[in-house]
Image (cartoon, rainbow, N blue to C red; front, side, top):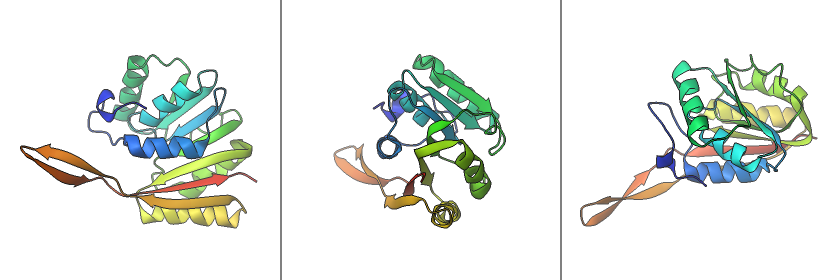
Length: 186
């Protein structure tokens, strides 16, 4: 796994290493997987997924121009050639994707149900969706969708606290709690 400090970041939110580890484990990406990262931000998950799926393809969907530029720069920095960046606000940009093995959602812009509806048609049976949610609305929307569509799902909240060295002391520095919701398409 790549240290957070290795990514080119700017002022765009980034999924932290501990959350990336859990997310990628739940996504069950294989060497030839076709994956989409919706709301890709800096591309930290996109890059890590691309390094796992070296014979596969990763699509990074992002609606913010500055984030798209950061993804491009991080793709270049980490020399991953199996990433395609799509500058669009999901669910736009998802329609032309091939059949997917895994979906990672890091941001929905309030379009959770619409995004999941489109992805449901793109995801292979047995494929996995992992939603990282920092808002109650996104968490509730994803859980409701999976429940109403008969998907097997699990959800857990993660709160990471890192130690930060301040002179002779170690101080706790909490990161935002994240709901990780993973589901398998029936």
